[in-house]
Length: 305
Length: 327
Image (cartoon, rainbow over all chains, first blue to last red; front, side):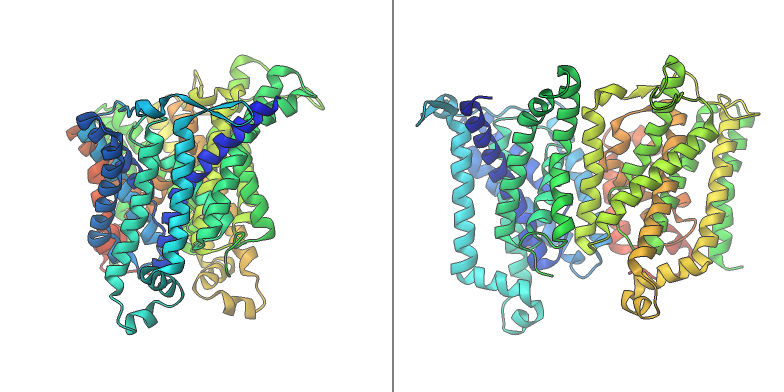
């Protein structure tokens, strides 16, 4: 395997990782602050992608499409928080799982109703469609580099938000003691809606960004949702730092596993069997990674208790 | 007799009555639907052992359902193509015999539940939900990427497997077979809940520290419950695959896990006959609403949302007027 190809795959893994981070960050915030497990997070990702595809189709502007994805997902998040999620905070996890599973059914079929079963396409803007020459003679798609940049920028912004702003202080306080900050005069229900909408907006942004590489279709959020769960389990629930580390680990493992494992088995097996075993193992690699982390740290890399 | 007991008896008898009526009216499709309800209820009864008794919210039970399905698919596939399952170190042939397939499915489901449970039960709460979901998904992707048994397309079986003395291709005979199994498993599950093991398991759900203080290990109780639960669900999977004469990765997908959980919840968590009511309602909805609109999942979602938010004891809870402990 050439070094160039390897570097390219590492970049692909990074790109996948930062996308997962956008999903996992929202999930882990929502869990950390409200103690809620939200299966419908993948639906918000899908809503972001559909909003972006619809706006891009109508206006032709990619920037407007991204703004639309943020706005639509945040609005959908705020609405479901006000109507449904709010009633679930003091319920057990089983009720939360079921209610948010019900939301998935409603959102997925509702979207199919409105947009039909055929996938939509979201085009990469012309300026970003070509490859970029990186130092060392590596050609890499400009759009994917942009995704990595946006992802890292959002991660940085999120860390700043949590660490340095008043809202960040309230979020952290909410994570450690809900009753206390309510007693101190913070409007806790407003804070909850805000955190939920923020998480939703991140998921929507991820959906729109990925939607331009893949197709925009019903159910696109679910595989990503489950990977985001794996990320959170690895990183530790409630930890943004854990989400970032976990997302990059999962992104790299998944991408590199798919490339390297068949070759690795090819060194001592015949080619067709090596491809079969390698690709099967590659599809399981991130779950094996998760099981490995669980064996040594049941609460994840950065999880507390 | 309490209202709940009467209701349970009525629910349980509803299935064979429906099937018999369909036999008289010559509606084999209705018999097949009743069979489907019995099989899905069986899967729900399996999940309910972990969920209702043990309080283990597993979102990965499709794994065991699918493993049961693939146990049937792989054995029957080798039997119908006359290729041995393996030649070394000893010759192992496929089979078209249901009892053998069931035993294999139950053992495979139990082993998978042992492995997944041993890892997942190191955690609890939300971690447990996510991890069971992730392991289920792992098997799903494995089934898709493993080309030997059809990959994404799944495996078709030409003729339904045989049971000694029965013609399983006759819908009513296959229904009776599935119904008897459901009845037996319900009986055993009822006995299990009342046995010392079931009581200890319930206690571990309510207060794990106290159980530990009296010298029992909650981890081992839960693991055993998870294994039994996985084995029962795998048996249901084998029957389901035989009903359709088809097995595919869809049986392993997390939507399946969600649906099995819906059967339990619609009926009422922790109630022995809850899954029977839930599965019957689900299939009824699928056919009534599915006939009205292609988008019936929207209504299913709304109904589920209403049940979760406002009717916390499920259907049986509403009808019997009393909630069971739900924690």
